[in-house]
Image (tube, rainbow over all chains, first blue to last red; front, side):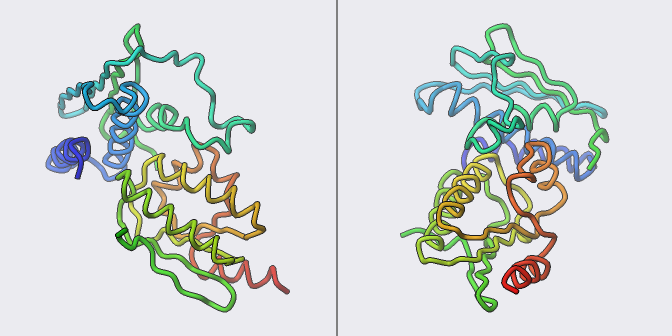
Length: 126
Length: 120
């Protein structure tokens, strides 16, 4: 298991302890998986000398997660929409869409190399 | 040597692939899984069903492999169906509109029935 996956499992275990609903667990797992993968592959360019930062906090109602990388950032406005017919067969580009769908709130720092995600408990609709 | 990631069986002229892993989110696991699926296309299998009933989670890297597989299947005139995708994962397929790219059936029986009717 990678460090990232161990981290994700630690977060999920905490949510399970607090009896978060199964679909919320799936939503969080998907979002953490995609955000960490994006930080490693796209943000840091798979450079093992670069770091990914991770921080999270949990209250009764909300999980907050912050994932950052050492990259130059990206512009959300210029990201291809993978749902468009001309993009739907492209092999990459779905991670950000999935994060925005499965988390309650998502925003980025100005540079675009840090994502802030929030999940409100019980807001997933399978 | 790669770890076997799939189990393969034949039902008539339909090749059914059952994925062994519960999660497809590790890069090496996904790579091995993808390579083993591609090998089936290289073996001239013309009707291929990938059964996801054991899989509870997959990352977008898995979708990447599936898209590549789907493209190659089309080039080789192979009919590729997916089945047994659980509701959570179907949500990811729907959100990304990949449910319009792949032929997805509820379960193995439905997939086999569809492919069998195609022959008639």
